[in-house]
Amino acid sequence: MGACESSGLQWTEEPVTEILLSRAAPEVSFATFTRRQEAKVGADWLWWWIAPNGESYGLLVQAKRLYVDGTRWSFKFDHNAGEQRRSLFEAAAALDVAPVYSLYLGTQRYRGPVDCGRVSHETECCAECAVLAVSLMPANLAVSHLVTDAHDTYSQSVALEAAFDNAEKQAAWLGAITADLTPDLREFLHTPQIGVRAIARSLVDRVLHVRQGQFSKNVEASIRTESLGVVFPELPGDRGHFGSPYMPLLLRGLVHAPPDYVVSMIAGNELGDPPFDNIAGVVLIQTGG
Image 1 (tube, rainbow, N blue to C red):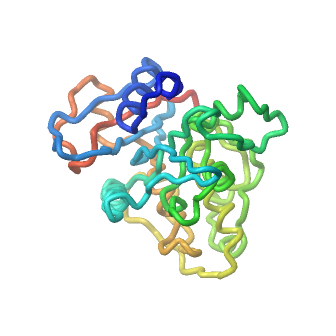
Image 2: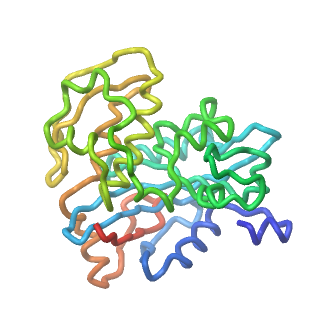
């Protein structure tokens, strides 16, 4: 992104994604599906984090670049009359993974004179701002009229580089869902996590932080999933103002073992046809914990 900006070129999502993946190798491996509809633009990627014990966390990730107009930020989440967004949610639900946006924020200069909020912030060449260049935002937080500036973006997303560093002792808000927490979920939300679970916990924390500011207590009965192999089969049914239960949305992708297509990819086999035409391929990140 910085090279494009220095050359006066407009950078877009797909080339940046390809460069990001190529430069992350060999720590990160990826493969494309053998057949794609070429007409599809802004293709999504399945990302899987895999721990040595096999525990895995799956996301369906759609890339969005930042557009800056003065102090106003936008990501065009509702592009194409919201069709891309609907496709992201529908495909993620069918694949039992969490829908997430990968936000490409560009350089500090591109973002303008905004503060990352850290004590160590520098007005130029800020290391913390550089880390934020690629950030992950839970898709249920990505609402165009609610994400309009740097503060909204930074508080509702987590830098990809820092996603493993979940040092929070307790999630931001538990409130009315406390009574619906199973012992294993309570431990997950009350203790720092590492590796695969840190990724999931970091995204959950962002949603709980926003939920804390919502006054309604829209709490429903716990939801028990029928999917095999999930780490947390019983989750709170609280919807908040998000329209649907947020804990199942984010944690259905946390499983004891990766799905068959991931196992096949690890074994060196080619991916077959995509499960949905808007999915370009699979990204694997094998963690140390």
